[in-house]
Structure formats: C-alpha cells, structure tokens
Amino acid sequence: MNDSKYMKQALELAKKGVGRVNPNPLVGAVIVKNGKIIGEGYHQIYGGLHAEINALASLKESPTNATMYVTLEPCSHYGKTPPCVDAVIKSGVSNVVVASLDPNPLVAGRSIKKMQEVGINVTVGVLKEEGDALNATFFHYITNNTPYVTMKYAMTTDGKIATHTGASRWITGEDARQKVHEDRNRYTGIMVGVGTVIADDPMLDCRIENGRNPTRIICDTTLRTPLNSRIVASAKTIPTILLTASTNQNSHQYYINKGCQVFTILPKNDKIDLQVAMKTLAKAGIDSILLEGGASLNASALEAGIINKVQTYIAPKLFGGIAAPAPIAGLGVAHPDDAYKLKNQKITLLGEDILIESEVLKCSPELSKKSAQ
Image (cartoon, rainbow, N blue to C red; front, side, top):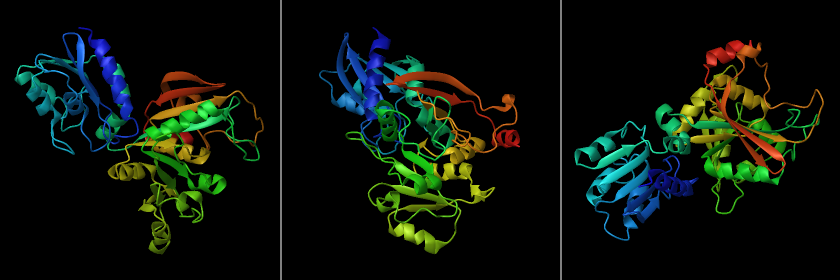
C-alpha cells in the first residue's frame, strides 16, 4: 500500500480547515481498504467533530481490517469532543498510519500506545516533515503557551518600506496583496502599533471570499488610538484588542463601550512588555499573530525575542533617500556577528514581486539587548 500517497491526500484535506479551527490543529484523515478510499474527513471548525470522526462518519463500507491515515496523532482526552482514539479503536480498523505525534501533554504518544495495546498496527512518521510544517503554529502554541508570530513587511529592492514623505501604497502588486489577505485568514490575530493606526487608519480585515477576519491587536502604550478610527468604529463586528500600559479605567471604558477589549500590560523600558503581552494573548486563545507593524514595532518585537518567522515581500522598485524608512528601526546590532539569524528560506514569485519566508533562529532577549547597545 502506498502510504505516502494516502497521507498526501490526508494532508490536503487538513488544509481545508485553515482559518477555521484555531487554536486547534489542522488534521485530515483518510480510510483505505483493499486499495480503495472508503472514507475521508477533516477538522472543519473549532469545537466541531475531529477529522477521524468525520472520516468514520463518511464510510462507504465496513472499516474492519482497513487502514486509517491521519496527519496528527488522534486525541486521547476529553475536550470539546470525546477522545478520537476510542472511536478509532471501536471502528475495527487494523492499521493506523500517523504523520506527526501530538506534542500536547494530554496526548503525547498516549494514543499510539493505547491503539497498540489493543492490537492495532501503528506506523508513525509517514510524511512527518510535511505534517509538522502544517501545524507549526499549533506545535509552538501548545508547547510554549505563546502565539506563533510572523513578522511581515513589504519593501523595495533597495530596502525601503515607504518614501521619504511616508507614502507606502502600494509597494507590492495585487498578487502579493492577495497572499497577505490569505494569511490574515490563516492567523488568529493581526498586530500593529498605534502609530500605524494614526498614520494609515487601516481596517486590518481579511478581504477574500469566505475569509475570516483576524482579531486586531493594537500596541498602544499610552492609549491614544483615535476613538473615531476605523478599527475602533468596527470593533463590535471585528474582534479588537488594545494592549496598553495605561491604568486609567475611565479611558479604558471609552474603548470598551465601542466594543474593544483592553488588556493592561505593565511597561518595560517605557514600552509594552511584548513577552508578557504574548502570554496574555495566548490565554485569550490567540495562537498565531501576523505582525504588520511599522519599523519601530518590528524592532521591539525582535528585541523581545517573540518573532518566529519573517515574511519579506520585495518589489522591483527603488525609492532611494536616506530619510526613507527601512523595515526595522531602533539602533540595530553593533556587529555583523550579532545579527538575527534566519534559516530555512523559502522563495515564492508573486507576479513581479518576490516573497522570502524565513524562520528565526532564537536568541535570548538579553542577547538582543546587548547587541543593540
């Protein structure tokens, strides 16, 4: 039996849940008997049935002696739904093929052991790399209790995110902007600084068909987000969180009355403590953040060590000008050896533009601070 072939099908099914299941993982399942797919399913929506249950519900014939391919180890605990592993065992399948183990401490290999104990033949690690990549966000969130953060910016070929006058619309073309909206659908939250809100008055919504708007998160140390901004005006229809160091409850109430949530975060060096902010947001169910901030917030996020991935959109344009801003402000590192290191670069052509996606090699905030001195 071609395990890779059927696991690829399960992975494709799992992707259908993008933007719908956070903070749960993306999972797909395929049931095969005598070389024929007899059932398939995926996790469709948070709180809904899991992939294995949907696959079993779709069966065209008895699954006795069949093989189930599932992209992630079946759950073994009660959550929004009962344990999937019990349903898999009860179904009568004789083989289960798994791409990735679930790092959730409530699962973490328990389901594999439970299935093996009742005589089910279990194979783990088929297309593991693809399975792990599919759920990089979930794996980070469940093991670190912080959101997976992607810093995104668009720049010209000479490294400018705006002209010397501050004009930035549009640096990239339609294909690149479409990709951004697809990612807004994928990530639970989108974060900017208050400076971006004041300068651009953005909506930060998702503009694709059947897309889901991310929760908008504004870093606003002194709470100066305009009450008449489009973000505040639409807060009753699109979830909006203000992160602030202000403890003035009367000021908070103005935003709360407009539909915003206000989280008070103690400051660090006169700015929002982003490490504390990430833990606070994780407790609120924010498993992933697309950071679309300006150069100042980008610098603060790097220094805080919260960035997991960088998306660099490069347009075939030159702005020039010493006063034209670059993607990351602040003092920067003192020596080339102190640079923030990136790895696993992936390059995608989007019309005339180039997207480079890179993972960030982690360094401690203490090292980041030292480098900036």
